[in-house]
Structures are given as C-alpha cells and as structure tokens.
Image (tube, rainbow, N blue to C red; front, side):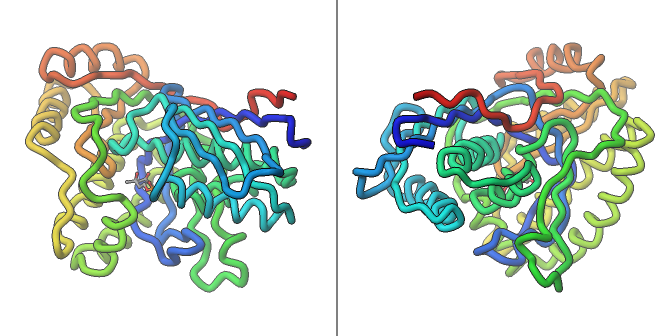
Length: 333
Ligand code: PMV
C-alpha cells in the first residue's frame, strides 16, 4: 500500500468456553493449554492503519485519546513485529475504536489485536492466510488469535517440543459444531481491572498449587467439549463451560498473593443462574479476568434469561450471538 492509503479492519471479541490461562512462553505468547471460544456479534473494534514515512514514532489513538505508556508500548512492539516481517521501516498512524468496555474482562484486547493485526498486515503488505493472521494476532494478545475467526474457534497451544513453536500455535474454526448458542453479558463493572490478565496468569502459573490440576482437567474438558459441540448437546457444553471457568478462577484465587476478580455482585449473578437451572432453564456461567458474568445458553432462551438478569441485578445486560471473524472494511486513498 502507498502511504496515502488507509487499511481499516473490524474484529469482534470472543468469549472462551475452555479458557486460556497461563503462558509457557511470554515472548512468543504460547499458551500452556488449548482453548475454545465463541466469537460474538457485538462490541466490534474498528482499527485504521496508515503508514507515515515522515514520522519518527507510531501515533496511536484509542477511542479518541492519544495512547501513551503501556498501551502505546504494546501497540509499537506489535507493529515492530509486523515491520520486521514485512521488511518495512515506516511508522504507522493507528486509529482504533472499541465498543466494548476496555479492561473489564469482556475481551477488548482480543478484538483490538485481531483488528490491528489485519489492518497492519494489509497496510505493510504482509501476505498470509487467516491461520497465519491468527499467529500474528496471538503475539499482541493471546485471545486475539481466536477473534480472527467467527463462530466456535479452537486455539492450539502446539506441542511443547515443536520445532517451530510459533508456527504450531494458531487458531482455526471448529467446523463440526452444531449448536445455536448465545451469550448474555451481565456487565457489573466497566472500569479497568485491578490486576492485568498478563500479571494474573504469571502469578497463577508460578505460585498456585491448583494450577497443574486445572491444566490436566482443561485438556479433558476440551475433548469433551468437541464431542458436546458435535452432538449439539447444550447442557453438556454449558456444564463444561461453567466448571472450566470456575476452575480457572479457583487457580488464581489460590495464587500467592491471591488474584480475585469475582465480587459479591458476581457471586449473586452466579446464584441467579443456579436458580434458573433449578427452574429448568438451561443457563451456565463463564467469567474472565474481571467481575462480569457471561451466561451461556441456547439462542432461543437468551431473551428470557436477559430479562431475568435485568430484573435481579442493576447490571447492563447485552445479548450476543455467534459473530463473524475479522475482516477488512476498506482501503481508502
Ligand atoms: O488475551 P489475554 O491476555 O487478554 O487473556 C485473556 C484470558 C481470558 O480472557 C481470561 C481467558 C480467555 O481464554 O479468553
């Protein structure tokens, strides 16, 4: 692309049903375990990248605010990787707009780095298919590898002894899933989280006595999840999802010092979900690096569950369904 052209990409967040929690290589962002997610149809991030041959540094604007500090450092490190691979030196002008609350455990980093990876690869003329794009997005934020694809997506950790571990860790769609699922997001807090997921993972892997068991369990959960998705077994998918997330939170709560994202409001929502199940409604919880809860359910039950969440909490409640993978919106002169 010429310096006058702008590449614009859109990506959606994803929510993991089998979580990614823990890296085995911080630099390459290689996870300890495989994970499996659903890409959502809400909260897209739109990112525009233009090359500026005259600039001495990258210029990054996020939600209208000039990025500095850690946000700028992460974007520049990522763009350095793209430049190195493309054999280019120009700095970039990046304008990124989130619609998801940043840092609230609703995966803005996933949609953010998936959109940045696609727009930057296009702007710098870096060739590659979607699988290759997922490897690149992974380097920005692990979960971003999965937002490259729509629907249900699996991210392979890759074998620990792989000759080329970067190549071995990529995401791809789960092609044999037969499930019309929804996620009802119960947004209790929209502020930034007290401990970054990066730091929380590091601490969990290094100090939590529960971590090894969760890793073993998570591997078995993934195999069962593939079967349940193939059979369209909502109750099995839900049960595996909820226990995997609760297990992940248990590992970090046992870390030293403990990381606790769950709040009293989180636990109250978990109680409402349990009661729904007792009433015969298929609803299961998952939570990420924040206090918010996502309720997994059959699409047909989503409105009813959302109504119950609105009745019983003060939260902002958003119904999400399966969404698309990252795509280029336009390249303008
Ligand atoms: O991609 P990161 O570094 O923001 O990690 C996200 C980890 C979780 O959201 C908690 C789990 C997951 O698999 O998305």
